[in-house]
Image 1 (tube, helix red, strand yellow):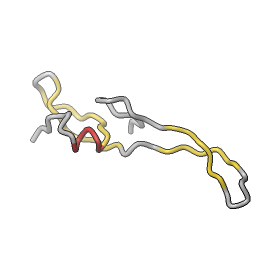
Image 2 (cartoon, rainbow, N blue to C red):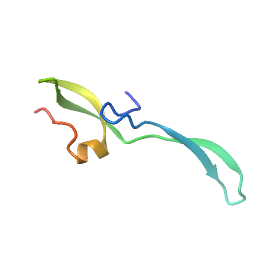
Image 3 (cartoon, helix red, strand yellow):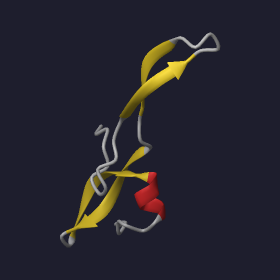
Image 4 (spheres, rainbow, N blue to C red):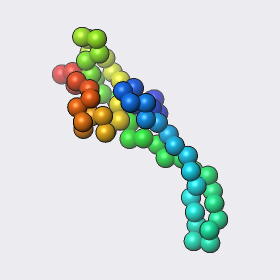
Length: 63
């Protein structure tokens, strides 16, 4: 499954977890990606879309 949105390109970002003693460890945050059936160029197709794009109606869902 794709880790990036096919509409906006949102994907994984990296950063640090910081403990109470201020120790830093690398970690990643993943985007909330869902596989949906959407209309692409007039035909239904399965694409990976983030929930922000789904909520803002940037994709037309296929039935």
